[in-house]
Every structure is written in structure tokens, then in C-alpha cells.
Image (cartoon, helix red, strand yellow):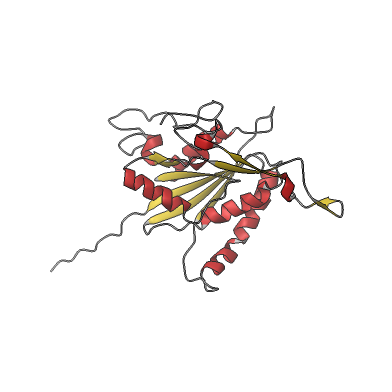
Length: 248
């Protein structure tokens, strides 16, 4: 009697993309390290494979911080499992240094986002989720957005920013004449930004939180050439506008 072996389902690959931004603010270094750890240890449903991509246009500052974050992953795993690493939190973390513009020394965020989509196509990612390097994300942030997409039957979603906490970049504590990189409490400012507050699109939210299914940037039909023999759509891509507003 012939028997058949059921093949395991191909996992859905989620690529979390961390984009770095100018590093003059005192809190950004610590937040970048936390963001890398948080991205690499997201709690996801069974059948979802996690990968992380860091796009950085200031590698002299960013690369050592990412290395420190990766070294701290063992501590994160141990704390979650009560000292026994019984849960597999392994994921691939890629770091890509983006050549900066010769004139300004910077790479604008919209171009980083578009480059990230090109790399996601190269990697074969099924979906991408953007993290900004200074955002405070929960350990289930990715799964919450994926659940929202599934419930709505949609291909893209984002989170609207209602409040912003900022440490003033011109103020920093010193200890023994050396900056600690920590701003005193009186330099912390909070802003209420209802419906984006004119900073982010009132309909699309913060592009730094966008979750996109692959067909959004490669076209219908699941191939990079689009559906029905049509060329792929342009990147959903964050054109050159003040707030990266784009109608998906």
C-alpha cells in the first residue's frame, strides 16, 4: 500500500526593516539597540519566519550599536525563558550600510524605504514591517498588525501616532565633564499629535509603522512582473513629499 508524506507548509517570511535616522539626539543610540533586540525577538504566530534588516547611512555610529544589540540577544532570550533557553528566538539579522549623498552626507528616509522594498524582493520576503530606530515597540507589535490585516482582509496597514516623546538634543547631563548621553528630565517634551498632527498623513498614519504584503510592491499574481503579464507597480514607495504621503 502506497503512503504519502505530507509536506510541511512553507513558512510566511516577515522582514522587519529598521531605518536609522540622524543621530544627534541623545537617546537615539540606546533606542536603536533596543529596537534591534525588540525586532529580533518579536512574538509571532506559528508558521511565521522572522528576519530583520537594518539600513544605516551612518555606519561609523550605527554598526557598533547593532553589534552591541546582537550581543544582548542572549540576555533577552534568557530573561524570557527563566534562565533556560528552551524557546527558539533565532532569526536572520542583516545589516546594510547605505552610501550617503556626497553633498549632504545623508540618505533620505523615503529612498531608504524604497531600497528596503527592493531588498525585500531580493530576499523573497512575503511581507515587510517598518520600524523606526527611535520607536518604542511592544514584543507583540508585529503580530498585532498582522492580525489586523488578516481580520480586515487587507494588504497594508500602519499605526497612527497620537503622542510623541522627545528629548531635547541641545541638553544633556555631564558627569566629570563628559556627556552621559542622557538628557535630564526637564528636557523631555511631549506632543499631542491627533490624527498625525500634520506630521503624518491623517489617512495613512506613520510610514515608519507600515506593514505591507508582498503583492503591494510586486504586483498582483505574486510574481515580480506583476499579474497578467503587466509590469510591476512602482514602489508604494514613499515619494518625495514632506511627510512621505502616498495613496496605496
